[in-house]
Length: 422
Image (cartoon, rainbow, N blue to C red; front, side, top):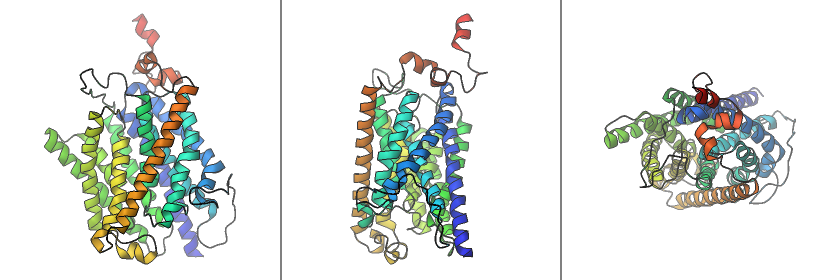
C-alpha cells in the first residue's frame, strides 16, 4: 500500500510540473513576440487552459480512454470516478495527469495563431481541438487504438502531444497567413524580433524543468526508480540539443544566436519525449544532438517557404517531434520494449525495420489527421465568424489593446489617444 501511495504522489507531482509548463509557454511566447501582444499571449494561455480542462473533463477523456473501437473511445464522458481500490493509480490522479498533456498540446497549437488571430478564434478552436483533434490521436496511441495494437512507441508524447499540436499550428499559419511586414514583395524575410530574450530564456528553463514531470512521471510508478533513468535521458538530450543548435548557428552566422540555442534545448526535449523510456543514455545524447541540428535547418526552411511561425512551433515540436518518434525505431533497447510488450527493439539492436515502420505509419497518420481536421475547422470558422484574423489596424495597434482594451506593459506603450495628442 505504501508503494501505491508513493506512485500516486509521484504522478501528482509530475502533474504539477507539467501544469507549470504552461507558465513556461507564457514567458517563451510573450518573449518571442512583440511587446504590444504580451498581455494577450499571457491571458489567452490562461483562459484556453480553462476551456481545455472543461472539454477534457466532458468528452476528451472519454474519447481517449473510454470503451469504443480502434478509432475512438465512446464512454466515460463527464468523468467523475472517485473510486480507489488501493491498487495502481487513483483514477483521479491518472485523469489529472492526462489532462495536462492535452493542455500542453493545445498551447503548442496556438503558436500558429500568434500576433494575428481574433480572441474568438482561440475560444472556438480550443473547444474543438480538445474535443476532436487531440483525443483521437491520443486514443490511437495511448488509449488502446489501432496504432497501439501495432506496437506504436511514444513514451510521453513526441507524436501525441508535440506533433499533434504542431500540425494544428501549421494549419493555422496557412489559414491566417503571415503577419504584416514579415515578408517583402521580393520574397525576402524581415525579422520581427521578440521583445524580451530574458523572458524567453526563463520560459525555456521552466519548460525544461517541467519536462522532468512530463517524461519522468510517465513511468506511473516509483518502485524500481526507473523515473530517474528517464529523467537522465531527458537531461542529456536537452543539453545536447542546446549545444548542437548553438554550434550550428555559430558556424552558419558567426554568432552564438540566443533564440536558436534556446530552441535547440527545446528540440532536444521534444526529440527525447517519445524514446525517453526506450533508449540508452548514449542514444539520448545522439537523439538530442540531431534534434538541435534539425531545428535550425527547419526554422530556416519554413521561413524560406514563407510560413510565418513566430514561436517556431512547427520546427521545435513538429519536425523534431517526427525525428524523436522515428528515433525509437533506431535506438529502442530490447529490455525496454520487446521484453515489456511495448513494440519491438530498434534497428540498431537487431530489431530490423519493423518498429521503424510502425513509427513511420504513426507519424504520417497522426500528423495528417491533426493537420487536415484543424485546417477544415479553421477554414469553416473563417467563413462562419467573418474571419479569424484581426483587421490590419488592430494588428498594427497590437492585440493587447484591440482584443483586451489595455496593454500588458501600459506604462511603456502610449495609448493611441495619447499618441494622437502628442
